[in-house]
Image 1: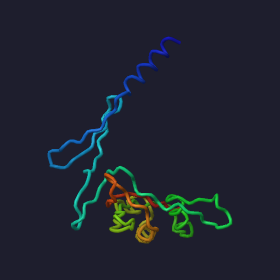
Image 2: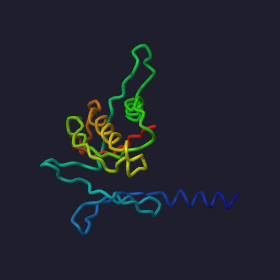
Image 3: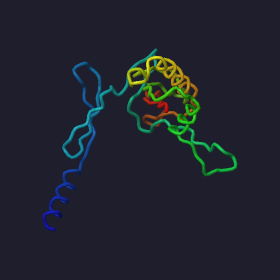
Image 4: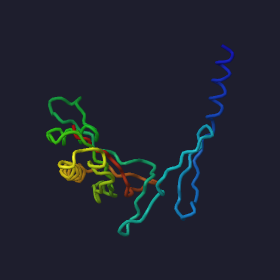
Amino acid sequence: MKTIFFLLSLALLSCQGGRKQDIQSAEGTKHQIVDTASVYYVNPLPLYFILKGDTVYTLVDGGPVFPIHTSAPDNPDLFIDLNNYVKKQVSDVHLGKGAVDLVFIIDKEGYIRDVTIKKSARENGAAPNVAARMDSIACKVIAELPRFTPATRDGKAVNFLKSWTVRFK
């Protein structure tokens, strides 16, 4: 019992004082290091980048919020989040199993723009004859998402880079 108490105390003490710090990499991009229990996690993306003259952040204070809504007016307890919304949009697509990894920007107004395929359905193991169709449908579903509440940084709305995987069953 004393051994368990000692190990538990040691674990709790080692987790105290986790902190974040910004560092400048050799390439001149900022990365965020989080020190938790003496283990360092590095955000592999820069904190922000410039795209078409706009600053796009990868790390924000308040992330974008999907407009959770009820799908049935007669059942107000039936809420749909982003994951279920995307699943519902592709539920009628019967192309087989596959997944498409996408990245996109949620702009300062909450609209989706610049949808890009990060990893095609073909790279994720889908049949080559349907992979292009899956890629196209996934891009369309993400591009037509309803308006988000935008991400915030220092209390101001900012552009945010988000990644998402659309799965077909």
